[in-house]
Amino acid sequence: MAHESQTDPAKLAAARAAVALVQNGMKLGLGTGSTASIMVRELAARVRAEGLSLRCAATSRATCELAESLGLSVESLDEIGWLDMTIDGADEVDPDLHLIKGGGGAHLREKIVAAASRRMVVIADPGKVVEQLGAFPLPVEVVRFGFEITRALIRRALQDLDLGDCDVLHRLRGSDPWVTDEGNWIVDLHLGCIPDPVALARSLAVIPGVVEHGLFLGMCHLAIIGKPDGTVVRL
Ligand code: 5RP
Image (cartoon, rainbow, N blue to C red; front, side):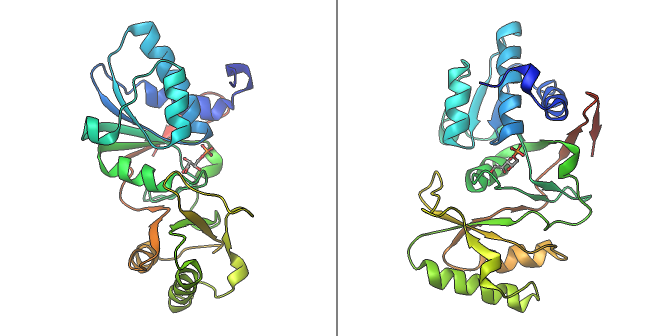
């Protein structure tokens, strides 16, 4: 368990500012990743200190285990239903608050939870803020059945959008390979830049073996960017 003294001060600042938005009685989505984990710890500390009553849904098994170990009440999304707010991290945030997520491989559940939320608040350090998405490899969750066909269809879609055609740039995550919470695999698309995220999202979404991609477009309502000096910027 990371102690505060070991915690990235920028991530901690963002997490604290987001936790300050939480109100008693809220139904909350809990994100995944290192920044979201800091947020979960801060949230649990506030719940203990103030006796808040919250209902939480987690975006991954890892977050569920962490939250429960800290005494937060975690239920399934279907038990809770619509959420007031989700607080989650991101791999990239652009000026339109479009995101790349899924560096931790949880973007499928993260997107479902975000879609169930009235507000999605992203917390991040300054390194996540970009002018254009795509330097971070875009995660795409795919079913195992017919994997090579799905990969070929992804490659064709990228060629159609002039986004590179080299298989080596579209890597299956992990050598084993790595398996998501839903039992699928992840292909990371090393695109460099994504000039038209909407077109790419649309093309990936219609490929049968693609379960979900890591482009979160128009889903984030507020991004809180923490700085190493402990202050935050709201986008
Ligand atoms: C997990 C995610 C994470 O939110 C994203 O990878 C950011 O993680 P971190 O806060 O560790 O940088 O999308 O699927």
